[in-house]
Picture (cartoon, rainbow, N blue to C red):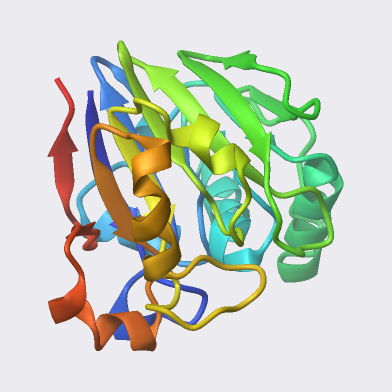
Length: 245
């Protein structure tokens, strides 16, 4: 299984990075974790056809993590090239928020039953779900966004990828990342304490409790980008490809 970093930036494009979006690829199956507002552009910049993606899982309902679905769906329904079915999954309230976002940006643009087949699923708390080729275990985290925020632990192609989404420190992150083949973790600031987000120093101090096989830091703001010389772990870059086979 391969993980491609489509976008690893924060909401404000710090460092010129695209909004959050990770592509999981195994065999003929492709899935996304998050689809931030700039993700359709980022996918095309990397030569990835959005019509080949069958599943999208969303951590929380901020625009830099789910806003790109509006443009993703708008192209799929308007251009009429898509053949394969699409499954979208997100937190409680996801379906209404997505429809509202579509109608805000493209009035009349929402189609309940597009010809390619669209399935919309909302997480049921922390219940493990099978979503297409993915097994997804949501973990409730702490990040104010008008709906329940989650971190996701995803098994796909015999490998496990865990992603924190956006959150301040919560103890469930230890279970989320335990023994994961890849633990994608936000590190918004280097050391500044802040609610809603993690700092690099907090993550580094608790890594011994999380015990992932590999750590990848993402969602860095300008503060972190100016301190990269002090970071001792892998940092995501747009376009990076990680082979977990």
